Image 1 (tube, each protein chain N blue to C red):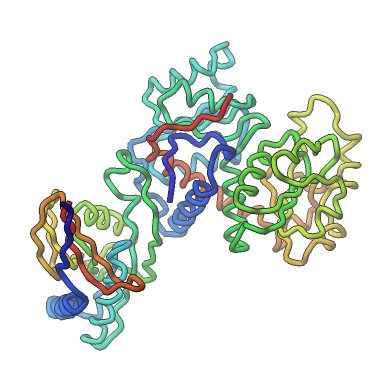
Image 2 (cartoon, each protein chain N blue to C red; image 1 turned 180 degrees about the vertical axis):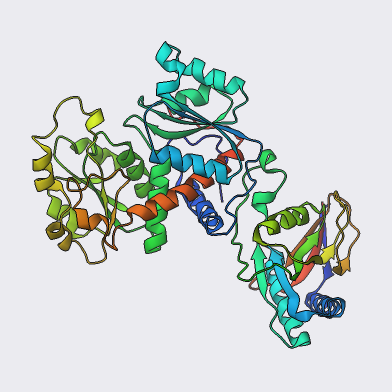
Amino acid sequence: MSWHRKHLLDIESLSADEIITVLDTAKAFKAVGERAIKKVPALRGRTVVNLFVEPSTRTRISFELAQQRLSADIVNFTAEASSLKKGETLKDTAKNLEALNADFIVIRHSAAGAPHFLSRVLNAHVINAGDGAHEHPTQALLDAFTIRERTGRIAGLNVTILGDILFSRVARSNIWALTKLGAKVTLCGPATLVPRTFEAMGCRVTHDVDEALREADIIHLLRIQHERQRKTMFPSIGEYTTLYGLNKARFAKAPPEALIMHPGPINRGVEIDNDLADCPRSLILEQVTNGLAVRMAVLFLVNGGKGPQEIAPS
Amino acid sequence: MPESAIILNAVGIQRALTRMAHEIAERNEATADIVLVGIQRGGVPLAEQLGRLLSSIVNQTIPVGSLDVNLHRDDLDQRAAPKLHPTQIPFDVSGKTLVLVDDVLFSGRTIRAAMDSLNDFGRPRKIQLAVLVDRGHRELPIKADFVGKNQPTSPTEKVQVRLGVPGSEDQVILHRP
């Protein structure tokens, strides 16, 4: 048990021990979610602002429900309805929210490093709900939780992340989390979206999808992030599906126990075959359920974190 | 100079638990309604032992559960987040005589948190409290119904209950700082 951080900004700066603490705590919160009364008073009287400057549905709803289950008071703040549109800076927006005595800020922002910036200018606890293509720490934690719950371990597993790695904060956070916990991570996708530079993060890069799936215990699919691509990175969606989509023939060549994960939203018929998305070896909906427990755990842990916060170099 | 004294040895603990089990049976005529819930962590092995003793006294199986009270603590914003342990109450507590079991009764705040937490599981007809050691210094109007040993202490002393630790005899130790 070790958690003294005031914020959750990224996975990169966490130790394996801290990640395990989150997973163990989330296990207890998952049990709370199975009771008749699913609400506990752990954050009673605390105010959380969900500052979603970039659109999000599932992450925001998951955080919101987690906050409600912990009895926190909630303010939702979306970019469309905010003064950010009127020219207010992020710092001023956040300072104004803090002036209302917000205790936590959960931020989703298109700029990498926005949560780290807020953690330096605010007294509130800051939780990163996704910053640009940088990190999405709670997604990686819920993915690790799901893998550990289903297979009983993470160390030694072969995890293949398939798809748009370059623009994916989910991929980056997952690579950090999985390698810290001892998994062997393989990245696969078109060369334009999976550059060899990722080998520096301690994983293997291949552009041969059959080879990437051959020994995979976990197949982690990622959506093509159209919104982050400024130029075309591959000829067409149809060609991507043909070359890299997970179809039945490709999945049949993976080990018989291989499990499919996807952070959502899924594009049926693009990165994943329609039937495979719903098959018993797909963990996609379990990931959603576990996301709630993991976000409760993160809010609960950072609430007790008062110690000096290590800030990743900016 | 720090020093430690054994205030209950394994035999003493067993005698205390046996007496407490008899007292619980004596106090509650409707033995079919008794359930035990141990507070994580120290209360859980005690509740299991009390459950076995009580079951043999009343000649029926007494259900035993475990309860983690950390999410109901009143000091969560003043300390590092506590480690959470499983809560397992695989029976309905409504209408029952629920005996909360803990190892050491001190400020009483854990017991308050436990009673708050139990609200989420139903409405017991009665809640009673059994503790192995009552060391005084209550901060809330809470009193134990069944006590293994009353041990006057100073606030700076520590009471350690060692039960089922591999390679160590069961004992209760008083540490003076």
